[in-house]
Image (cartoon, rainbow, N blue to C red; front, side, top):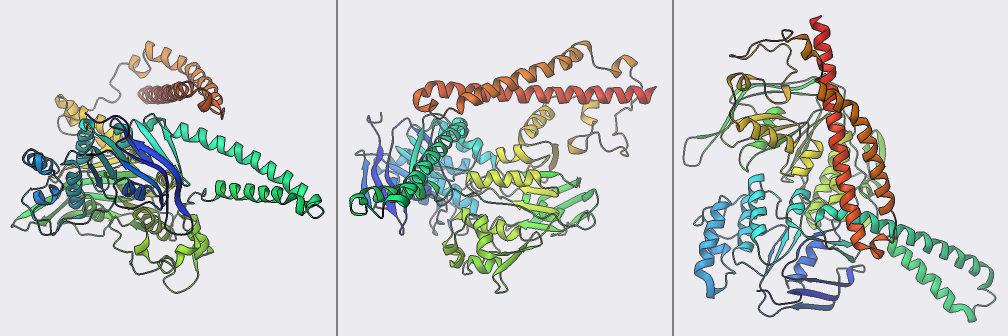
Length: 631
């Protein structure tokens, strides 16, 4: 049983890597039942804070407390590759000797679960394999405190789901940094928000974070407003009286300067990234047509591995297609086949007219680590870039992506993983394009930049191909999913990730001959020229006329839904007004939590009602058209 009180704690902690501290006066503690996520912007000090908690970095001031006998394990954001030792020796390096046999057996099982052979040598592992091995190394010793820095990066969806199951069984204190909202919602019971050197704590799961953070920011805005008015009064007084009463009023002048410094601290790093993509030349409706693609690669031991087998699809202008599948299944290979960057073994790919492709590189191969940020954006030696047909100074453009002027002259190697991704996006978006290819774009991005990227892609009128394991990102954006099974099969599904799950599960259920023969995926119902599948019958226009309208219950439901939607909207409006009270959380935290839950439930009810209304209305219109055609 874990000892009472925090297992590890920081008190009045201060740390700086320059004139401005990452944090000062910071206090936090992790108890045995804490399952916390740590959120904050890139560069706010999240990864550094995990290193401090693990005892790997000393504080400039303050105290780190660790319960005697407490074991702490940390997964780094960028784990160093193992040496030439076996993986089982690598992952059990920190196993306590008094329980070595049992924990070694546990390590073997974990390695196999994550697709790694225990006796394999560590040299030559891929980036994803290095991360999985490092994750097993953190999990194997059964630590009392587990610190995970972006554990889902480069993991495929099955591995992420296995990790969620493993963490659900973990008995110690957990603190995790991740941009993956779905993952955080499943593993957390509290949130630590590191914002401009200050720590805020929410004792509720990540699902409650955004409403809570909005309430804190609203309180901050009101405080800033009162502070600005006080500064204005002080400045008026100084203009009239400080000259005549200089010696007697130095205290008041000092107070004004302190107020100004306080306001500067409030305002310091509150900008957001400004992302936009210039749409390239207008092409036709068809962007990509693939017919019977086959692709295989040679295996080291001989023979070939099939990545894509007899795959055909059509992708049209404006579609946003997500590619999912296990690591090594061939997602990047399929993308390169579809954009004409890699020839198929068999089959044909045809691109539409005027296609201008922009490619976001997952492995950052195209960033020179010795180049400065300035030279990455202006390789010809100039001091400006052209964005949307307008000339912008390099430093001004970098500020749009949350870089400051001092960073413009720094080498790429000095950047964090999230900053490198932002730099790649900055360079990518200097060029126009109507086909945007994103290979794992969400890795290492902070949530605000990820939200802005999502909004940009949602507004983008071009076509998007995106390889991602981020379920929330796919649900918010994808109009279609290409799922690779790893054995060469590629299935095409309509909708986002949740839609893919429901369609996959439905397809796995027993079906009759006609159901199996029906068209599947995004092209279902839209290929007017496609011949009926074998075993299917063409019954268009042969149904009784009564089937050309909604049934009685559906018609009544359609008529009642607008009133329900109006009630839900009124309920949401009332709850939002209540939550806008900046003192509600301080005055009544339980009431604030209840109102937040009620608001989320009301929004879910509204969304379900709107979706149902749209579905019934679409069905009514389709039936009406069938009836008109039959008449």
